[in-house]
Amino acid sequence: MSLRGVKIVGVGHYAPARVVTNHDLEAWLDTTDEWITTRTGMKRRHWTSDNEATSDLASAAAEAALVHAGLQAADVDCFIVATVTPDYYFPATACLVATRLGAREKPAFDIAIACSGFIYGLTIASGLIRSGVYRRVMLIGAESLSKILDKEDRSTAILFGDGAGAVILERSEEDSFLACDLGADGSRPELLYAHGSGSREPLDHAALDAKLHLIHMQGRETFKLAVNKMVESTGSVLSKANLNKADIAFLIPHQANKRIIDATARYLGLPEDKVVINIAEYGNTSAASIPMALSETVRAGRVKPGDLIVFVAFGGGLSWGAVAWRWAQ
Ligand code: ACO
Image (cartoon, rainbow, N blue to C red; front, side, top):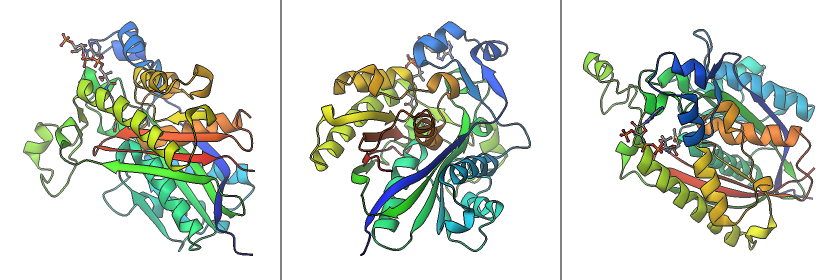
C-alpha cells in the first residue's frame, strides 16, 4: 500500500535557563511591569547566555521530540530549521543541529521567513512526506532573538524571547495535513526588519552605529495587519479544508502579543479554552512560538486524536499563513 499521508509523532520544546522578568527590564528601560503586561500579556521571557546560540536551543528541542517519539536521530531523513537568528550566515543551522544529534550526512536546511517560519516549514515538510520523497522529517522552529535586540529600545526590547520547538513528521495512512494558506508581501519592509550583514547594506561601522543589524518595528501598524491577516488566513484555510470555525479544537497562533491573539479569537468567535496562549512565559519567540505552544499543549495531554488544530502566524516579510491539521496518533 502506498502511504501518502503525514502525521506528527513527536514534539519537544526548550527555553534557555536565563529568565528576564518585566521587573528586570524596569532596571534599565523606561518601562513598567504594568505597561508590558497590559499592552502585551508578557510577564517573562527566556534569553540565551553569551555562550548559547540557536543551534543549542534547536538541538535540545529536537532531542526532546526524539525521546517523545521513541526514535533516534538516524531514523529521521531530513532536518529543517525555521529561524531568522541562525548561528551563522552560513553554514545553515540545520546542518549543525543534524550533526550534533548524530545524523551526519542527512539533508538539512534552514528557512527564513520570521514568525511564519513554522507554518511555511510545516507545509514544506508535509509536502516532502506526502510526495513520497522522505519518510520522516524533523522540523524545528528556533530563535535567539535576544542576540539581535536593541536592549536600549523599550518598544522592542521587551517583546522578544528565545526558545525552540520541534516536531517529527512521519508518513502515515491517515493524513493530518488538511490545507494551508500562505502569503507574503515585500512592499513594506520598513515595518519590521533586521538588516544584519545582508548584501544591500553590508555590515560596516556606519551600519553598526545605526543599529541596522538589530530588530526595528513599527508596532502599531504591524499590530493591525497581524490581526487582519491572521483572521483572513484562518478563514481561508478552513474554507479550503471545507471546515467551519466551530470545528476548531485548538487555535495555536504565533505569540506576538496577547491583544493580537485576543482580537483574532474575538473576530473568529472562538472561546478562550480553544486558543493556546503561553506568551506570559516566553514573549515573542518568532518561528519557535507555535511549535513550543504545540509541544506544551500535547505534552499536557490536552490534544486528542481527531482534534482539528489551526496554526496561524503573521510576521516579518511581511509574511503570514495558516495550516489546518487533524491530530492523529
Ligand atoms: N514601556 C512604556 N511605554 C512604552 C513602551 C514600553 N516598553 N514601548 C512603547 N511605549 C510608549 C510609546 O513610546 C508610546 O508613547 P507616546 O504615546 O508618548 O508616543 C506609547 O507607549 C504607545 O506606543 P504604541 O507603540 O502605540 O503602543 P501599542 O499599544 O501599539 O503597543 C506593541 C506596542 C506592544 C509593540 C504593539 O504595537 C505590538 O504588539 N505590535 C505588533 C507586534 C507584532 O505583531 N509583531 C509581528 C511579529 S514579530 C516578527 O515577525 C519578528
